[in-house]
Image (cartoon, rainbow, N blue to C red):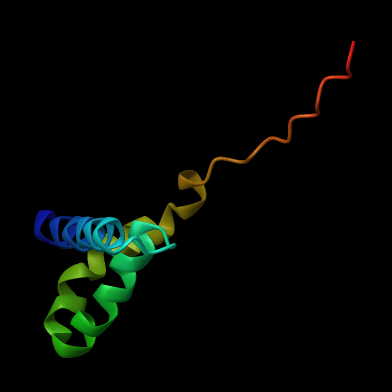
Length: 77
C-alpha cells in the first residue's frame, strides 16, 4: 500500500516538474496522470500494485471535494 501511494505521488511530482519546466498551461497532477497512462500500459504489474490504493481513493472520492461557494459582490457605497 505504501509502495502504491509512493508511485502515485512520484507521478504527480513528475507532472508538476514537467509543467513548471516547460511552462505548460495544465495542472501538474493532470500531466502526472498523462505520464501514468503509458506506464500502466507498459507495466501491467504497476496497475495491480496501484489497485488497492486507487480503490480506496475512489470509494472516498466524495470526501475529497470541497464545494465552492459563490461570493456575491458587495454593493458600492
